[in-house]
Image 1 (cartoon, helix red, strand yellow):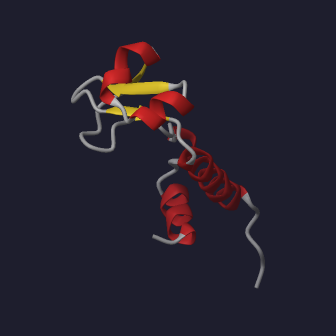
Image 2 (cartoon, rainbow, N blue to C red):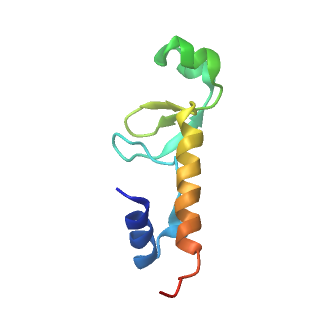
Length: 92
């Protein structure tokens, strides 16, 4: 999906203020909660356990997430889309 389309949907339905990135499970849409690293070390790849400190668990299905290298790219994309949505409309 292109960023212009995302921005159009956000603006049309006034959703930009409702964005809560990284708060829902990608598998079941359950809420995520922070969880202690030691509590999930046995459930994540060894390299992730060694390199990352912040972990979240889905309160519904138990899926574990961590803030790996991809999170910065995702945060940057969300910020870019929100910047586009708040930019003034340009006259043609």
